[in-house]
Amino acid sequence: MHARILSIETLPEELDTAIDLYRLIVVPAAQRQPGFRGLLFLTDHATGAVRSITLWEGPEDNFDEGTYQYILSSFNDRVTIKSFTRDAYEVSVRA
Picture 1 (tube, helix red, strand yellow):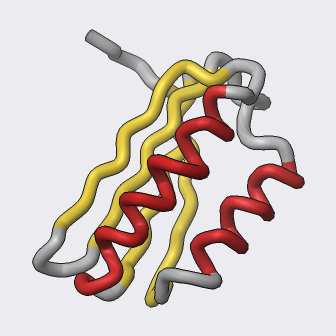
Picture 2 (cartoon, rainbow, N blue to C red; picture 1 turned 90 degrees about the horizontal axis):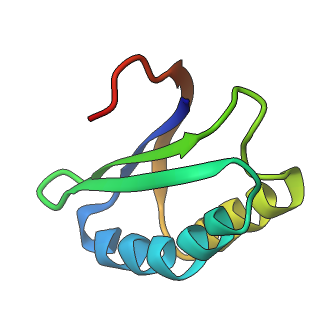
């Protein structure tokens, strides 16, 4: 299993909008992708920090490019992104 982790810094006052967008756009889009195995959306309302963790069957599984671009544009139009990084990891232990 493999994980993709997005680390995002946004404005604290826009965090509820980000949560709503994630729930309405990212979750159903992820569920339609081959190899999708789960996700977490971690937030800190005090700082606006966000971690999105998506779990995938194999290293090649991920959002297709069109879906990924649609997700990004949905957030960019409604949430201020101060910083954004993407990392990929192999899941070595899952309970």
